[in-house]
Image (tube, helix red, strand yellow):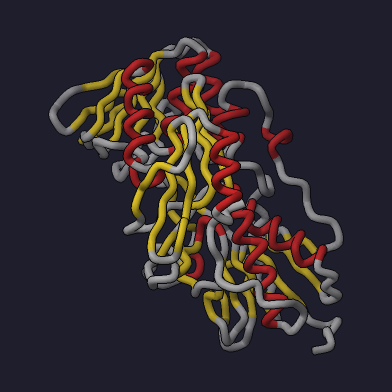
Length: 381
């Protein structure tokens, strides 16, 4: 099919998925128009550096900002509605954008504690502003932090703060945090590390959070009270899909990241859950995977527009690492529900996760080179 230069691809979002999708369109030699809708006042930023860079004072907000992609039309406005039948995106300003393909990549927002607390002493750790507020309190003399949630962000933040000599109380609903993400063996290893460096309160929920000008107090379900200078809520994220309407928590796509195939609308990154080989939904919200989804969604859009090969179903093979108390967890891919966890390394603690569709992930503890080697052998690199 000959490419129509008047065709337009609209990308909503300028985070990991949106930026990767936009760059992929430009690299492909696409001759139509690319429009990027950026609804965030500060533009896109590298979310992995919020707790690693800004919180400890190593980086500033401008240093983790994503550069705008050159060669596109950028619209600083917020998307508020999609007219699927007319293939039209409506913006907060009243502007309408017709599209031949639409890639949705608005990402996610912090999942707060249900009982909202209006206090500078209680914060999420999702945006640069969140980290700046927390860092200001710590630089002002705060020496104790309670972290609610021991997932990837909560666990890594606990490690970062203890390295600065700050007391940390780490609270989690799960008795085995990260087991579903990293497997039972590595999760057990991390639990032991936490026990050596912070006070842990696992398998407990939060009943209340109270705050005044000088401190915040978390009351656990058993009545135990944790008083600290700062409370960081790290209960994961929720997809930023409220503006689209409906009751679904995330946009469910097919295996190629199509949300509406007929209208050529795609969704990628933290706002989307894609179908796996067995029809189950999988939402993965970390930076590397969001970028990989953005690349894949753009490739599928190009194929559907008659300008590229079919990239096939999406599979998470992106790599990421987690630094905890001087140790490193390295992973490629994402374990799927029902996968079996088996040893994979020649040395060290390295496991692979395998199911009906083959190996979905390789994850190791202090075994970076082995994980990379095994991941390459099973096609995850």
